[in-house]
Length: 260
Ligand code: COA
Image 1: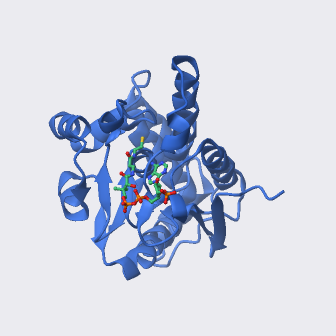
Image 2: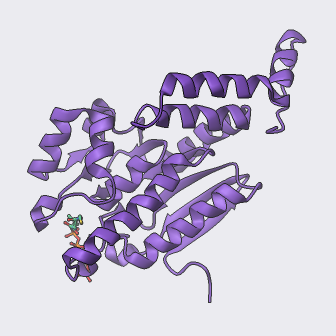
Protein backbone atom coordinates (compact mmCIF):
# COMPACT_ATOMS: atom_id res chain seq x y z
CA UNK A 1 0.00 0.00 0.00
CA UNK A 2 1.24 3.50 -0.81
CA UNK A 3 2.44 5.65 2.10
CA UNK A 4 -0.06 8.29 1.07
CA UNK A 5 -3.77 7.91 0.38
CA UNK A 6 -4.71 11.52 1.11
CA UNK A 7 -1.60 13.46 0.09
CA UNK A 8 0.21 14.06 -3.18
CA UNK A 9 3.95 14.63 -2.87
CA UNK A 10 6.05 16.12 -5.61
CA UNK A 11 9.73 16.97 -5.26
CA UNK A 12 10.49 19.88 -7.58
CA UNK A 13 14.08 21.15 -7.65
CA UNK A 14 14.60 20.49 -3.92
CA UNK A 15 11.16 21.79 -2.88
CA UNK A 16 8.69 19.15 -1.66
CA UNK A 17 5.14 20.18 -2.57
CA UNK A 18 2.71 18.43 -0.20
CA UNK A 19 -0.87 18.64 -1.49
CA UNK A 20 -3.77 17.67 0.77
CA UNK A 21 -5.79 15.65 -1.72
CA UNK A 22 -9.40 15.22 -0.58
CA UNK A 23 -10.96 17.85 -2.83
CA UNK A 24 -14.46 16.30 -2.60
CA UNK A 25 -14.36 17.01 1.18
CA UNK A 26 -12.64 20.39 0.72
CA UNK A 27 -9.42 18.69 1.90
CA UNK A 28 -10.77 18.23 5.43
CA UNK A 29 -8.17 16.69 7.72
CA UNK A 30 -9.23 13.25 8.84
CA UNK A 31 -7.06 11.26 11.24
CA UNK A 32 -5.38 9.34 8.41
CA UNK A 33 -4.44 12.61 6.72
CA UNK A 34 -2.88 13.95 9.94
CA UNK A 35 -0.88 10.72 10.19
CA UNK A 36 0.26 11.11 6.58
CA UNK A 37 1.26 14.75 7.19
CA UNK A 38 3.48 13.49 10.02
CA UNK A 39 5.16 11.01 7.64
CA UNK A 40 5.59 13.70 4.98
CA UNK A 41 7.10 16.27 7.35
CA UNK A 42 9.43 13.57 8.71
CA UNK A 43 10.59 13.13 5.11
CA UNK A 44 11.33 16.88 4.97
CA UNK A 45 13.45 16.49 8.13
CA UNK A 46 15.30 13.37 6.95
CA UNK A 47 15.77 13.58 3.18
CA UNK A 48 18.83 15.64 2.21
CA UNK A 49 17.34 16.11 -1.28
CA UNK A 50 14.51 18.15 0.30
CA UNK A 51 15.57 21.76 0.94
CA UNK A 52 12.15 23.20 1.78
CA UNK A 53 8.42 22.42 1.57
CA UNK A 54 5.08 23.86 0.53
CA UNK A 55 1.69 22.77 1.88
CA UNK A 56 -1.29 23.38 -0.37
CA UNK A 57 -4.76 21.95 -1.08
CA UNK A 58 -6.08 20.07 -4.11
CA UNK A 59 -8.71 21.74 -6.30
CA UNK A 60 -9.62 25.37 -6.65
CA UNK A 61 -11.91 25.81 -3.68
CA UNK A 62 -10.05 24.94 -0.52
CA UNK A 63 -6.68 24.84 1.14
CA UNK A 64 -8.20 22.83 4.01
CA UNK A 65 -11.75 23.40 5.32
CA UNK A 66 -10.94 22.10 8.79
CA UNK A 67 -10.66 18.87 10.69
CA UNK A 68 -13.07 16.25 9.37
CA UNK A 69 -16.36 17.01 11.12
CA UNK A 70 -17.69 13.49 10.55
CA UNK A 71 -14.84 12.16 12.73
CA UNK A 72 -15.00 15.00 15.26
CA UNK A 73 -18.67 14.33 15.86
CA UNK A 74 -17.78 10.88 17.24
CA UNK A 75 -15.24 12.12 19.83
CA UNK A 76 -15.64 11.57 23.57
CA UNK A 77 -13.81 13.61 26.22
CA UNK A 78 -11.07 10.98 26.60
CA UNK A 79 -10.24 10.46 22.94
CA UNK A 80 -10.75 14.16 22.13
CA UNK A 81 -7.74 15.05 24.28
CA UNK A 82 -5.45 12.62 22.45
CA UNK A 83 -7.00 13.72 19.12
CA UNK A 84 -5.96 17.31 19.87
CA UNK A 85 -2.54 16.30 21.23
CA UNK A 86 -1.74 14.18 18.17
CA UNK A 87 -2.61 17.03 15.81
CA UNK A 88 -0.68 19.52 17.95
CA UNK A 89 2.37 17.25 17.86
CA UNK A 90 2.31 17.05 14.05
CA UNK A 91 1.82 20.80 13.63
CA UNK A 92 4.66 21.47 16.11
CA UNK A 93 6.89 19.28 13.92
CA UNK A 94 6.07 21.59 11.00
CA UNK A 95 6.76 24.71 13.09
CA UNK A 96 10.09 23.36 14.38
CA UNK A 97 11.31 22.02 11.05
CA UNK A 98 14.72 23.57 10.37
CA UNK A 99 14.01 23.66 6.63
CA UNK A 100 11.64 26.41 5.45
CA UNK A 101 7.95 25.48 5.13
CA UNK A 102 5.40 27.74 3.40
CA UNK A 103 1.60 27.40 3.23
CA UNK A 104 0.24 28.16 -0.24
CA UNK A 105 -3.33 29.00 0.76
CA UNK A 106 -5.48 28.48 -2.32
CA UNK A 107 -9.00 28.77 -0.88
CA UNK A 108 -10.80 28.09 2.40
CA UNK A 109 -8.38 27.80 5.36
CA UNK A 110 -10.80 27.12 8.18
CA UNK A 111 -10.39 25.51 11.60
CA UNK A 112 -7.62 22.91 11.29
CA UNK A 113 -6.81 24.38 7.85
CA UNK A 114 -6.05 27.79 9.31
CA UNK A 115 -4.12 25.99 12.06
CA UNK A 116 -2.08 24.04 9.49
CA UNK A 117 -1.29 27.27 7.62
CA UNK A 118 -0.27 28.98 10.89
CA UNK A 119 2.09 26.11 11.80
CA UNK A 120 4.04 26.81 8.59
CA UNK A 121 6.82 29.41 8.75
CA UNK A 122 4.93 31.80 6.49
CA UNK A 123 1.78 32.01 4.44
CA UNK A 124 1.11 33.12 0.87
CA UNK A 125 -2.57 33.40 -0.09
CA UNK A 126 -4.42 33.57 -3.38
CA UNK A 127 -6.82 36.51 -3.71
CA UNK A 128 -9.85 34.29 -3.10
CA UNK A 129 -8.53 32.63 0.07
CA UNK A 130 -10.72 32.80 3.19
CA UNK A 131 -9.52 32.30 6.76
CA UNK A 132 -11.37 31.53 9.96
CA UNK A 133 -11.63 29.54 13.17
CA UNK A 134 -15.34 28.66 13.12
CA UNK A 135 -15.18 25.92 15.78
CA UNK A 136 -17.60 27.70 18.15
CA UNK A 137 -20.28 27.08 15.51
CA UNK A 138 -19.84 23.39 16.35
CA UNK A 139 -19.70 23.82 20.13
CA UNK A 140 -15.91 23.49 19.97
CA UNK A 141 -12.72 25.48 20.20
CA UNK A 142 -9.62 25.14 18.01
CA UNK A 143 -7.64 22.06 19.05
CA UNK A 144 -4.58 21.99 16.80
CA UNK A 145 -2.80 25.02 18.30
CA UNK A 146 -5.10 27.71 16.88
CA UNK A 147 -5.78 29.54 20.14
CA UNK A 148 -2.03 29.96 20.61
CA UNK A 149 -0.72 30.62 17.09
CA UNK A 150 -3.54 32.94 15.99
CA UNK A 151 -2.91 35.06 19.10
CA UNK A 152 0.84 35.08 18.39
CA UNK A 153 0.30 36.12 14.78
CA UNK A 154 -2.45 38.75 14.99
CA UNK A 155 -2.61 39.76 18.66
CA UNK A 156 -5.04 39.07 21.47
CA UNK A 157 -7.98 41.31 20.65
CA UNK A 158 -8.40 40.33 17.01
CA UNK A 159 -7.72 36.64 17.76
CA UNK A 160 -10.44 36.74 20.43
CA UNK A 161 -12.84 38.33 17.94
CA UNK A 162 -12.20 35.81 15.15
CA UNK A 163 -12.43 32.78 17.44
CA UNK A 164 -15.53 34.02 19.30
CA UNK A 165 -17.52 35.28 16.29
CA UNK A 166 -16.42 32.46 13.92
CA UNK A 167 -16.22 35.14 11.22
CA UNK A 168 -14.35 34.38 8.02
CA UNK A 169 -11.95 36.97 6.64
CA UNK A 170 -10.63 37.43 3.14
CA UNK A 171 -7.00 37.39 2.02
CA UNK A 172 -6.65 41.19 2.06
CA UNK A 173 -7.77 41.48 5.68
CA UNK A 174 -5.60 38.48 6.62
CA UNK A 175 -2.61 40.31 5.15
CA UNK A 176 -3.47 43.54 6.96
CA UNK A 177 -3.60 41.57 10.23
CA UNK A 178 -0.23 39.89 9.64
CA UNK A 179 -1.77 36.45 9.20
CA UNK A 180 -0.42 36.15 5.64
CA UNK A 181 2.80 37.48 4.14
CA UNK A 182 1.65 37.97 0.54
CA UNK A 183 -1.57 37.91 -1.47
CA UNK A 184 -1.30 37.06 -5.17
CA UNK A 185 -3.61 36.06 -8.04
CA UNK A 186 -4.31 32.31 -7.99
CA UNK A 187 -2.06 31.58 -10.98
CA UNK A 188 0.87 33.22 -9.23
CA UNK A 189 0.45 31.36 -5.93
CA UNK A 190 2.86 28.46 -6.49
CA UNK A 191 5.41 30.55 -8.46
CA UNK A 192 5.47 33.10 -5.60
CA UNK A 193 6.03 30.35 -3.00
CA UNK A 194 8.77 28.82 -5.18
CA UNK A 195 10.40 32.22 -5.61
CA UNK A 196 10.53 32.79 -1.84
CA UNK A 197 11.78 29.27 -1.11
CA UNK A 198 14.41 29.34 -3.85
CA UNK A 199 15.75 32.55 -2.35
CA UNK A 200 15.84 31.04 1.16
CA UNK A 201 17.48 27.77 0.09
CA UNK A 202 20.27 29.70 -1.66
CA UNK A 203 21.39 30.95 1.81
CA UNK A 204 23.41 29.00 4.39
CA UNK A 205 21.11 26.14 5.53
CA UNK A 206 22.49 25.98 9.07
CA UNK A 207 21.85 29.70 9.54
CA UNK A 208 18.30 29.34 8.16
CA UNK A 209 17.56 26.52 10.61
CA UNK A 210 18.92 28.54 13.50
CA UNK A 211 16.78 31.57 12.55
CA UNK A 212 13.74 29.28 12.76
CA UNK A 213 14.86 27.93 16.18
CA UNK A 214 15.50 31.42 17.57
CA UNK A 215 12.17 32.84 16.38
CA UNK A 216 10.34 29.83 17.84
CA UNK A 217 12.22 30.40 21.12
CA UNK A 218 10.28 33.68 21.55
CA UNK A 219 7.17 31.59 22.23
CA UNK A 220 8.81 28.89 24.35
CA UNK A 221 8.34 29.75 28.02
CA UNK A 222 11.18 27.39 29.04
CA UNK A 223 13.73 29.08 26.82
CA UNK A 224 15.66 32.32 27.11
CA UNK A 225 15.48 33.48 23.49
CA UNK A 226 18.46 35.84 23.85
CA UNK A 227 20.60 32.96 25.13
CA UNK A 228 19.34 30.73 22.32
CA UNK A 229 20.31 33.49 19.86
CA UNK A 230 23.81 33.92 21.34
CA UNK A 231 24.39 30.14 21.32
CA UNK A 232 23.12 29.90 17.73
CA UNK A 233 25.27 32.84 16.63
CA UNK A 234 28.31 31.05 18.10
CA UNK A 235 27.29 27.81 16.35
CA UNK A 236 27.20 29.68 13.01
CA UNK A 237 30.72 30.98 13.62
CA UNK A 238 32.04 27.43 13.91
CA UNK A 239 30.56 26.42 10.53
CA UNK A 240 32.21 25.99 7.12
CA UNK A 241 29.41 28.06 5.62
CA UNK A 242 30.38 31.03 7.82
CA UNK A 243 33.96 30.85 6.52
CA UNK A 244 32.65 30.52 2.95
CA UNK A 245 30.10 33.35 3.33
CA UNK A 246 32.52 35.86 4.81
CA UNK A 247 35.35 34.90 2.42
CA UNK A 248 33.03 35.17 -0.58
CA UNK A 249 31.99 38.67 0.48
CA UNK A 250 35.60 39.79 0.90
CA UNK A 251 36.61 38.17 -2.41
CA UNK A 252 33.60 39.78 -4.17
CA UNK A 253 32.14 36.46 -5.38
CA UNK A 254 28.97 34.45 -4.75
CA UNK A 255 29.18 32.03 -1.81
CA UNK A 256 28.74 28.29 -2.34
CA UNK A 257 27.13 26.94 0.83
CA UNK A 258 27.36 23.26 1.76
CA UNK A 259 25.14 23.17 4.85
CA UNK A 260 28.02 22.35 7.19
N1 COA B 1 -15.25 18.16 7.52
C1 COA B 1 -15.84 17.23 6.77
N2 COA B 1 -16.41 17.48 5.58
C2 COA B 1 -16.35 18.73 5.13
C3 COA B 1 -15.74 19.77 5.85
C4 COA B 1 -15.16 19.43 7.09
N3 COA B 1 -14.52 20.34 7.85
N4 COA B 1 -15.85 20.92 5.15
C5 COA B 1 -16.51 20.61 4.00
N5 COA B 1 -16.81 19.29 4.00
C6 COA B 1 -17.50 18.54 2.95
C7 COA B 1 -19.01 18.81 2.96
O1 COA B 1 -19.65 18.02 3.92
C8 COA B 1 -19.35 18.44 1.55
O2 COA B 1 -19.38 17.03 1.44
P1 COA B 1 -20.59 16.28 0.64
O3 COA B 1 -20.49 16.80 -0.77
O4 COA B 1 -20.27 14.83 0.78
O5 COA B 1 -21.86 16.70 1.30
C9 COA B 1 -18.14 18.90 0.75
O6 COA B 1 -17.07 18.99 1.68
C10 COA B 1 -18.34 20.26 0.10
O7 COA B 1 -18.69 21.18 1.13
P2 COA B 1 -19.98 22.14 1.06
O8 COA B 1 -20.34 22.51 2.46
O9 COA B 1 -21.03 21.51 0.22
O10 COA B 1 -19.35 23.39 0.27
P3 COA B 1 -19.88 24.91 0.33
O11 COA B 1 -19.16 25.61 -0.76
O12 COA B 1 -21.35 24.97 0.38
O13 COA B 1 -19.33 25.46 1.75
C11 COA B 1 -17.70 25.78 3.50
C12 COA B 1 -17.96 25.57 1.99
C13 COA B 1 -16.20 25.71 3.73
C14 COA B 1 -18.23 27.15 3.95
C15 COA B 1 -18.44 24.67 4.30
O14 COA B 1 -18.07 23.41 3.72
C16 COA B 1 -18.08 24.62 5.76
O15 COA B 1 -18.56 25.44 6.54
N6 COA B 1 -17.26 23.63 6.17
C17 COA B 1 -16.92 23.43 7.56
C18 COA B 1 -15.92 24.45 8.05
C19 COA B 1 -15.62 24.23 9.52
O16 COA B 1 -16.46 24.36 10.38
N7 COA B 1 -14.36 23.88 9.77
C20 COA B 1 -13.89 23.67 11.13
C21 COA B 1 -14.02 22.25 11.47
S1 COA B 1 -13.44 21.97 13.12
